[in-house]
Length: 94
Image (tube, rainbow, N blue to C red; front, side, top):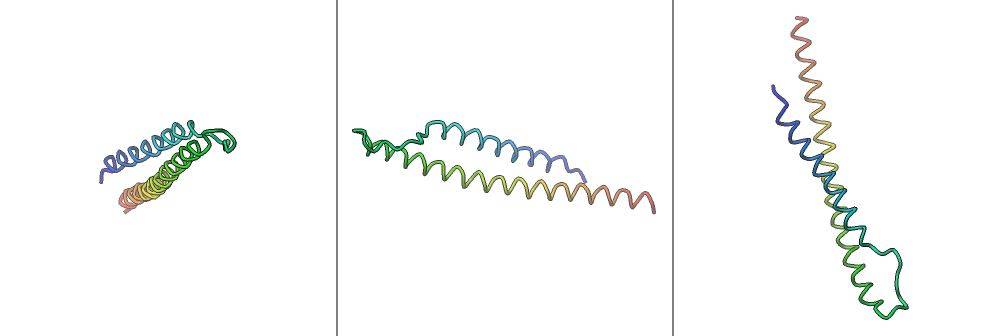
């Protein structure tokens, strides 16, 4: 059994996880950690920060989900590779 197509899918998942990390970093770079309550535009800035926090929450949710999928898929792929090797060595010994 050839596991190369499955390996390509896993690599694509890993690249997608890395892209989510970069995307989150780019979105978070616009985040302002200070709350500007006393400034004249405090309400508008609070709205912008709330929208940014919600966007980061969505990115985090999908990033965690994609990471879990990539890890589980990778473990299953590793087990399939080990099983394939075990079958190949048991045939040689028989």
